[in-house]
Image (cartoon, rainbow, N blue to C red):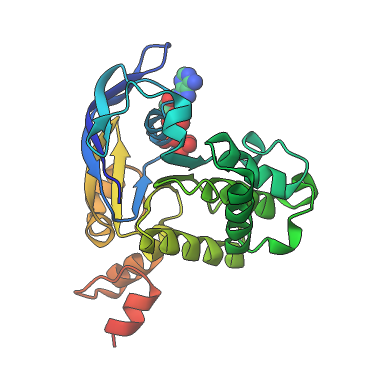
Length: 264
Ligand SMILES: Nc1ncnc2c1ncn2[C@@H]1O[C@H](COP(=O)(O)OP(=O)(O)OP(=O)(O)O)[C@@H](O)[C@H]1O
């Protein structure tokens, strides 16, 4: 179980304007969704976690130790990230080779990498496609290849950037199961996501970015109960919560399961 502590984190690109204006929070064992309108700095933040960018001020601590002295390669042994667009990640011609690449890069031997890759491909439902060319697969499956290639590295922290884009209902359900399973295995799961219904279904905690700061950080239910702050951050409540408001219910439910279990 890993912890990540963010202390007084500031960041500007060379162009000048400060994107992150002093963030202080801790990421713990709860599955965490990071939400915020376009341009709120979510991707910038996770690139800082991965060491791809360096803070202009402040520090990030992984399990109590600063990451500032770690190389990107060393950090990759601890923190895996599935990029938003699988085409930014995939470069091999065979699915199995692609998924084995990350584990081999972080020093796993070939047998172990092969075993981890096959397990990851099974988890994402692609066992039947291990010899396919990733670019012969549709976008949703290619995205699952990208997910598998990070899962196979077996890092303690896994970041997903918009995992549900290009996924249909079945794909989303599979990704929900993957996130829950990783969390149950004790992995730290951080996900950037715009789909509020998905957040309501899956994540225990939500952190809202707006104006370069964290404006809400609480259980998902408490965050989505803050209608006014969400509105100021240009975010919507999940559909079931909106419905509860429309129906004038005193208690507000987060998702369909909660509604059905408790409302009647
Ligand atoms: N390489 C870059 N150079 C300069 N500015 C950048 C760069 N990358 C992002 N930005 C700017 O930083 C701000 C934050 O972008 P970022 O991609 O982190 O936001 P986001 O919350 O992930 O947005 P989205 O939800 O659209 O992915 C935006 O104003 C963006 O234009």
